[in-house]
Length: 329
Image (tube, rainbow, N blue to C red):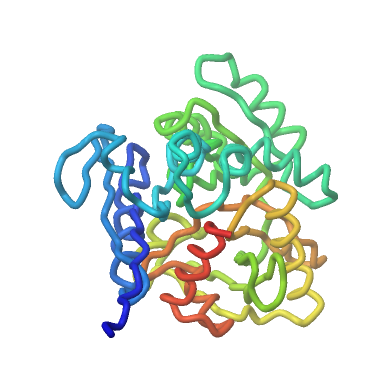
């Protein structure tokens, strides 16, 4: 009697896309394809060009055909369209299972201002923040905020971008408008936020791990080097541009506090599967401020979530397996 060969689960790895994080998405997607357990999964590259054209296995196709036939979509589509609920809506309409957060959780987390309002309602600390949109007469509001509510330096950033694209720390009022104009290049809404001087921390969470419904991974401290003021795009994705220490050198109380915050943000935003929350531990008083929650954290060779999972005892293929199994539950 012939031994039955188990059916491989076809995984469409969705990557690329129209956002400023297109190249990072391709790196994440390729890393996922290379590391999926080939005894369980049949990975297929589903790419979207910067112009919105769809490709299946490198060949041009349409959206419907690119998605058809996949048992699950592994969403590696960073930034706009991939993390803001849009592609999630397409996949749900098509009846296709996918990894990560759903429509609402993705949309809310992508908007840094609205997610902070939810964090505050949940009793979490966030930096004071001003939001304004392209086309409005915003400089009077900006001037009042910078001079009366907070003081320089301030952080200028697009409201809905990831990977720190367009983020600048401004310590000179003469450079403020230039930073705002730069941020508007990638988003129609811009934030100016209070600069919190402290240690950069990040903590991932993974659902259904270690006998917990939502389990916090080890906390990572990020120390940018090579003249980076903070954990910007280069520091995140280029080797040698930051030092990342996992587990972070914190006492047990602060470690648990940071992990509890990561779990709490995941829950109050309605995230699914996994996420990673960025925080600042303020110098002097031990207060932790929440910056944002990433519903689709990077999975490149230099990314933080796989490193934290490794410290927690998960190989990268095992992490991918857990992410997929969560999406099928």
